[in-house]
Length: 350
Image 1 (cartoon, rainbow, N blue to C red):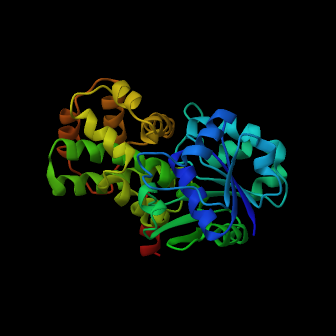
Image 2 (spheres, rainbow, N blue to C red; image 1 turned 30 degrees about the vertical axis):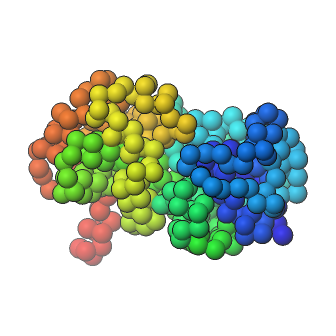
Image 3 (tube, one colour; image 1 turned 90 degrees about the vertical axis):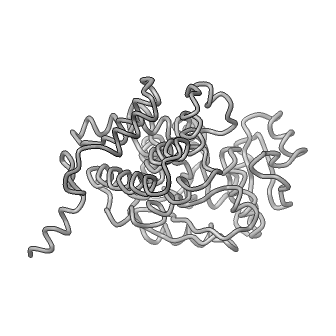
């Protein structure tokens, strides 16, 4: 059976490792230190999000990067987005022309605003660019690792490469679809975390399902507009990596970003909330990157701006949500430089 390397002992990294090992693949999970590797071998996943789970025999843990990457069919990077560049630099010397490079991180790099596939491409040999794939979808770890059915999307610019990744990653109760819109799939997975932060605030304030539905819908339109401005296909945001991920992340108490939004309405500081968490809420850093991109493009993103003000400028969540929900109503798709539906509009007049 093919060998797979997973870089990152995050909850999602361990979950993918267990799922693929149960499928029969030989999975090597790379830990940053021998101490961490030893603890994982002894204790298993040992996470509050993964109760009762043990590592199957097909999954091994090593702190030796060369051992983890020896003769593997694919390397899956499941690391926080702000550490992706560091981790791909460690990996790049072990890559070859037949090895898939899969990003399972959902975020944007602060400073550059780059997607994870762009970060990877900047750090590896151009000969291997065609092997870059991205994995994204409504994938809550606790449900997947306990065998509940889920679906996701793997995207690559080359459809044939996406199909190879699909075959490798599809497992019982884990259905993998393909796409060639790498930009849209990545941005859907990253930007939806901003909406999840706001949805958590709506729930924390007790505003009800009508308000939450309106907020999510307006948020989806906003992030799709940014996606199209950056070259994505608008239809991708209606798929698993877009609305599918939004539904899961905005509705589930298992969502880290939703949790942060709820806790902010209780008067807790962002620093206090983050320090109390064992996993990264990617929406926090993604809000910074998305806001910067919108400003560079001259694109109106009022929801992202309000979320940014709550996170980093001390704005009151209640006042921010009131401002969003009671904003000046125009045409539903109106927005500065929004060209989200221009393609369909032009087709309708042709």
